[in-house]
Amino acid sequence: MSPRLPVPPLQETTLSLVARQLIHALSQLTSEEDAAFSFAMVSSYYESMGATNDIFQDLMNLILSSEYLDPSVRYYTMRLLLKENVKSLATGIFPHPYYGKVLELIAEQGQHLTSLNLKGVWVKEDHLSLFCKLIQNLKNLTVLNIPYIANDEVLKCIGEYNKVLKLLDVSGETDITEIGIDAMLRGNAQLTRSLTVINIGMYGDENIDHTDVALLIRGLPNLTNLGSYSYVGKAINYIYNTDADFITKLNFVHDIRTNMRTMKAILALCPMIETIYLEEPDQGVLIQMKELRNINKIKLNKFQCHELHQLLEKIGHKIVTLMLSGAAGSFNFTRIAETCRNLESLEFYQIHTATHEEEIPFSKLEHIEIIQGNLSPSLLKYLMTGSPKLKKLIIGDEIKLDDNDMSRMIHRYKFDNLEALWFPNAPRLTCATVEMLMEACPKLQSLGELSGWRFTPDDMMFMRAIAASTNLDLILSPPGIFQQGR
Image (cartoon, rainbow, N blue to C red; front, side, top):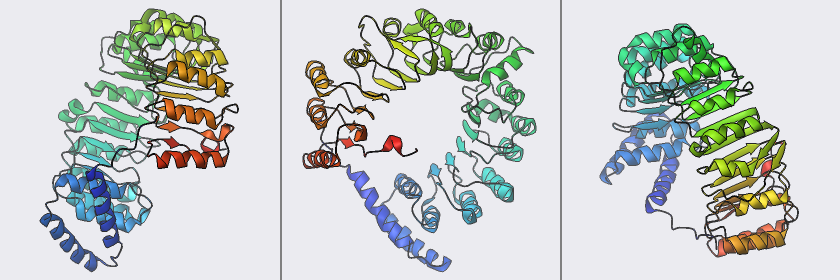
């Protein structure tokens, strides 16, 4: 039987109750005079009840994340609860008239913040001076998320005033150039040693020139990750052509249309890579990855299956995660089971031809997600029954198994570890399979979406009633989730 719903933690219940009370009180405010008086009363009440800074932080972030609330309520919540030693703040989305007020408030009351996420407060030129004042006042920031709003002046400001930043998110459509990057790097030496992660650029788009990103790599000796930038290999190759002895600490590299020259540069300058993501690599590139000693996660798009199989013959025992899409040729799951004994997660989108031979088990595989995989019924059975530790299974293709097929597998293999099963297109499965899964799988908590099953709305209502009446911790996902965007 699926697990029972646990009793909600007292902390969670209490926090929700206090949040509702505070929202009600703040929604009554009509002027700044009202706010001052109410703040004094609420603050006095919280202090008398022994509220700690952790409570203020949890309460504030809970309310700020509720974007359906009136922005004035969320703004007043920040004014009231952003107190000394509150460490983390995520503003959520505010309308334009609040941008200046929010920036001023954080600059005045957020001096002790170590993490700030301004996603939803889209600072541009008219608020640039306020943002720089904020950065100047928040000297303890180690994490700063400002996607879509950075430009050269912002980077210059960060370089001038921040010395301990470790993660900087300036991803998305931005106006960053070599001028801003150089200004940030020259701002202070302590920042260049501190920064380890920068999310910059947009996936698939070289909106920031690779030569400018090369400047970042050269100037940040402890940089491990360039996040959303898709042409890291191109930047590495640019550095290699001028200084082949330079070594980075990058553990993640994403590159598009990688050729042999670029791969040679990556191998030479990035010996610490743990995760690599290549899109449309040239022939012969994949096998070169065998030289990466620390690699454990491979992500590929538009690749040749036979080249991947050749690579995994060499290094498959290291690989924990495979994320693949746009495969050309025949993908052999049996060879993956043979070569990748430690594989825990397999995600695949668009397999041209999928095959298997002997049913060698995936002894450590926990997560399988395959969309447009052209899986035969026998191959699907192999993946399900040959993965004894399977926790999550998502198959986007039509499932040709029926209730009897599922019954035989469930009774024989039990699926003791299965937590989530998603078959959005399973026209031969009925309510009987839902009941069997609920009864047999002790950890099953998510089952859906069921609109592609032979499953009526009345069946859905009935099964939800059973789950509710027996207090099962099981989500039967609403129909149509996969069709909502169509």
